[in-house]
Image 1 (tube, rainbow, N blue to C red):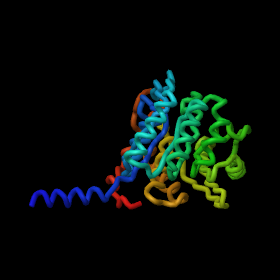
Image 2: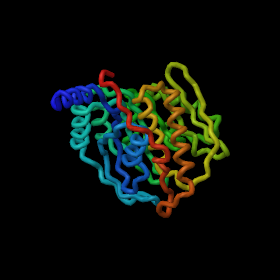
Image 3: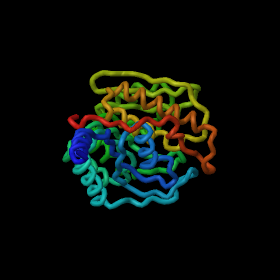
Image 4: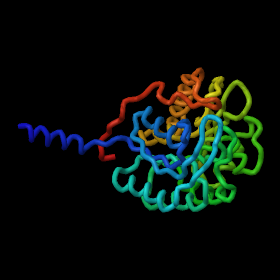
Length: 290
């Protein structure tokens, strides 16, 4: 009797899967951004998080002290190990510090035909530290923009990509269109760096969708890792089956809640992290035939 019950249980578990999201990004030793923020976000939204670490950083709330790149062959091995065994429902890509790292990731995306790729072109940390070499940017645009479902640059990153400053909310729509012209199928341009009482983000897609998202600005010094968190939340919601506009709406709501919940908390002496775990979701289990 016990063996048949055990068999039934095994059969039941074999037919189910977690919603699996892979982060390909750098490690933040301070825990507020990068791989650490991504894993916290995936868990908070009920997803199963996996990682392929591109670089180790020595950083805290005050800044980045050192960066140590992971060898490209080790990055490739991490991605292959995860995808070939566990599988992936969505991918978030963050810090890629060198051209050869970009190429390894692009080749892996093509080889494994990974779905729902969210590319966050991390170039500058909240502290102002530059995280990507200039020669890497052109390779990123050529190799990864066409493979992404959506890219999520902030204003500083978009300005760097386009070679011009973006100083007003009126510049967002034109900038998003120009980023689409660089090869991305969709762009979520984050306007949080603009002054004003409201934060405006702009979503544009190759098939003509233009949508703005506006919310009151939350006063907080604890905004380290906001961009990482938004892109990983977006990947999580895409993995759960939401269409892109709905996934953006839900990801923004999660980030705004996490900022508000962590605004009064003191972590370190600089820009502290969001409260990623303010409203955790139960781990999602779905039929494996997806």
